[in-house]
Length: 129
Image 1: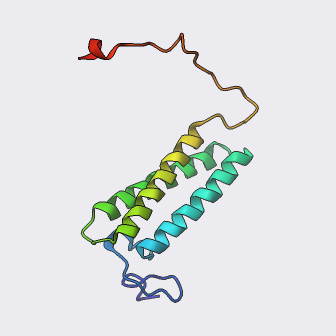
Image 2: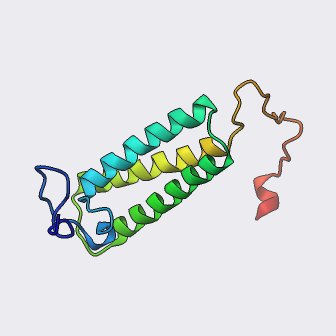
């Protein structure tokens, strides 16, 4: 494991680990796969409604930390192939959607407040200019 900071720690991989992911020890593709799996698990646990406020805060912290890492990977010095760039953006979108889902009502049986068309203020485009 001493070589873990230079090569991916996933058995059989051995791909270069960028500086942004040294603490995780994953290459970019394995980090993306790990983040996608974590999002699936978090979404499933949050949907079950069994998570308390502390656990929900852990979820939110994970989403924020992962999004920061993705931003650093995407704008870092390592040149990524287009396919990996697409996966970075897809994973980032997954994190954004998960964050929105965490902000929603935890119980599906509680009614969400709906806005009717009459309540939405309408401003003409000409009035904004």
